[in-house]
Image (cartoon, rainbow, N blue to C red):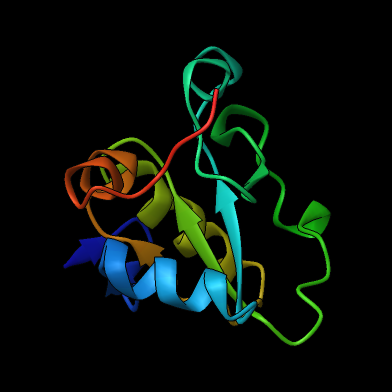
Length: 111
C-alpha cells in the first residue's frame, strides 16, 4: 500500500486481533472518526481524536501499549498512522476495515 508519505509501513490488524489485544490491555485504540460518528457508536475503551483536528503530538502516552488507529472503514486510520510516523512516532498499526469490520466480527460497540 502506498500512502501520503511514500511507501506505507502501516500494519493491518483484524478486528479479532485488536479485540484480543484490547482485552489484554496491550493496545491503546485511537478512533479518528469525527464527533458525529463517534456519538452514534464507538468501540468501548477507544480514545477519540478526530482526524480533522489530529495532532500526533497530542496523542496520549500509551504506557507501554501498542497504539492502534481506527476509523469507519480503514482509510483515515492509515492516514493517522502515516501522520504519526511522519512526526517521528513508532505507531504503525490500524484496525483494518475499521468499525465496520469490528461490527461484522460481532464485537461490541457502545453509543
